[in-house]
Length: 532
Ligand code: F6P
Image (tube, rainbow, N blue to C red; front, side, top):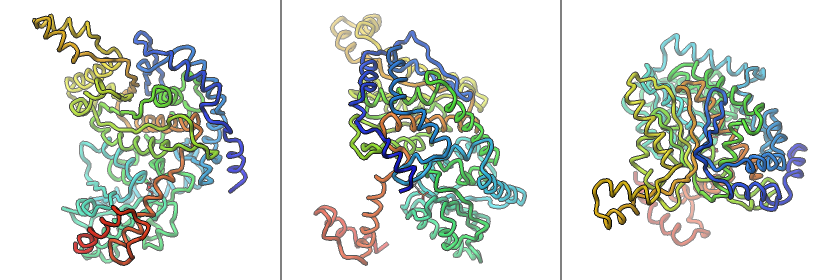
């Protein structure tokens, strides 16, 4: 453990959050606060507007929030993050994704960026690689899928295919129906040890070989923090692009992992996203707390989860092109904040990171909004819209935006029994039926939401939006006292799966440590697994 990490742990909060007077005051103020529909609270950050008018708020809460952030050393943590100091003590690392999009790049980052641009330019000039198969999972996949869908939705001259899952149907589908000879396989893996990516990469290499490609690895590219391992795997050195240990997997979209996005759409997409994210970084670094979009979103999130007890957060992008934003934010939030031990190693004494789920509107309205409005739990919602569309049918866009505003209004205002009764009576129902039906037509209201407005969907605004969520998650980690940059919870299952894979193949004896059900299923599934 290096010195910085030791001192970070030493200075980690000795007492639980719930024992902190500043927390008690903040929680008390939040409990007394209400959603006030007459309040308008809009912050402009890097060209994005964040409207928190639909959240619990009061002047007392705002004051208590400042004291809470100061008690949690928010400014110290923000400085450490942005200056590339260690902020991930369990892995002894910085989390310096912001430097990948900074206007002035580190020389090693600039050199790697230049190599990448040259690779893209050569491919484009020579009109090479009609098909790209992008192989990677989690952070090595979602950001690319998100950007390709957001900016390549209308089709591009290259076709992009994704294979993340170890389920063989994924890579089978990704390699079907096109010519292997004009195909580039992109393997993105920070660690270059991820089972899914390596196994899918092997299938892709075999596919090229089977098609008679003489040197298949010359049609493969690796993006990784372990160039040595990728080289040993067979990828030629000039096809390996580097990322760094201090870039977390779920923040690696800002690195060469976005090669596929550039080939699919254009290198300008990457540059635009980086510029938007850098503008949001600047806002996050400089805006005062009450005007700081990420901080305000984080405070709302903490209130909703730890004070009001909401167990989940719904993401509702009212833009079809942003469908992949939901899994992207799911990983960002849940891998970062799905923890219940603080940096000092003590249990966190308030509920932390919510489950994140969602779907683009208006599909979501016809799927689960019923539950959001009248279900017994409900969930805070982040509504995301683009003020302007790019398709040329204003009526579609008007209806889309009207739906978004309407859903949000219903969550804020609700509908009282008397209003529902009036409606039923006005529709000519007899009194008894009207009273009965009105009870079904009441909306509780008072359910929290954010509205995030992008002027239009561009690489710049998407970059800013993603950085906004990154910083929000970071601030929540600071308040809860947890490390948002590790993911130990994913590891145990990976180790167990390794043993079980051998047992299903029959090359290893069934572990005596298995519970009865696991032992039964290993025995039962052995045959079907080996007989394919
Ligand atoms: O699921 C755990 C995880 O380590 C994620 O954090 C990461 O994005 C994903 O696996 C893929 O990892 P890698 O890029 O090293 O293949």
